[in-house]
Length: 98
Image (cartoon, rainbow, N blue to C red; front, side, top):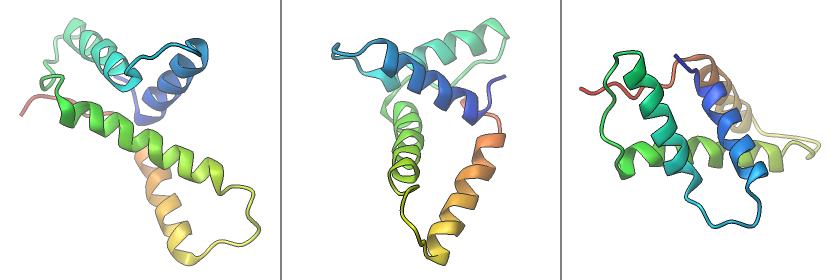
């Protein structure tokens, strides 16, 4: 099963390969993930706005850290947020139906 890091890498790769096209990348990556999970006999939650929002939120967090990486000094709140984001990347991307 893919980890959050793998999903984020797949999303970034998809966006970089398809420049100039107007695609809902979060939904496309979500559909691919759903098919992967179904092929492993794990049934995911429906591909709705909440599911694609999980992928979008993860990408927005990544963009925030990428943008602020060059700044010389960061607050403690920033490092706590970064630690939470880093810990999340090691976990499985959970889309199992409840």
